[in-house]
Image (tube, rainbow, N blue to C red):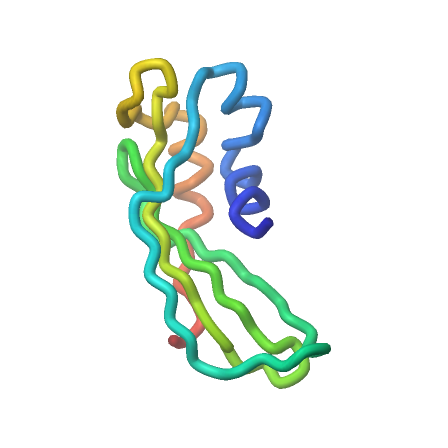
Length: 110
């Protein structure tokens, strides 16, 4: 799943989430469909980190037809870093925040 690959690049690995008692929750998702994909089309997903805040990140997944290069759909998502035991948002560690800031990027043209 594209989201777990993005999270791993930021240090939000399953082992970190388990050992720290943290989790991530998608609190907003907006999907835009632009072009049809047909059975057999080769699909490529690219993820872009758009914004980093103390307790949340905003990112985007672009779904592209790998043969034509056209964006078929994209999804903008806001994810919140959670303390699972308290069931409320929690700040990212300084290390994760620093790595995330290095990964900020602009998505392909929408």
